[in-house]
Image (cartoon, protein in one colour):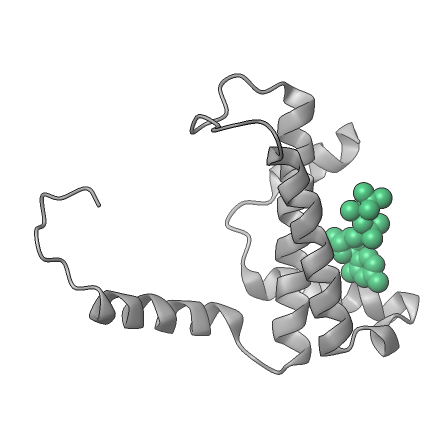
Length: 123
Ligand SMILES: Nc1ccn([C@H]2C[C@H](O)[C@@H](COP(=O)(O)OP(=O)(O)OP(=O)(O)O)O2)c(=O)n1
């Protein structure tokens, strides 16, 4: 596990494109493309969201920054968040969508839908 962590720490500014390409290669060399249909990837994504939710289940409210969490708990959270991201990136890819561009466009759309009425407000 430590080797994986060392490896991933060295990569900075990870792009969605890089993740997409790495995941496509990961699936291709294993012959898993045939199973990675939009529907299957969506179901896998939902399953991982469930695993992510389990980490927070029954804990009550959690402080930002997770100051009271152990290193192991944080590592577990990193893994489940990553699983969700990786399936999401693959889902967008097999649907032929540019997820990064779509997300940027959606942020702009959100800003138009929810204009800043009071710039000093924190909500
Ligand atoms: N057909 C598959 C199977 C796995 N993965 C990748 C995407 C996820 O990042 C991770 C999911 O692997 P597991 O199904 O083994 O799930 P977990 O890592 O959550 O293991 P577990 O469910 O045992 O906790 O592997 C993938 O891309 N395509």
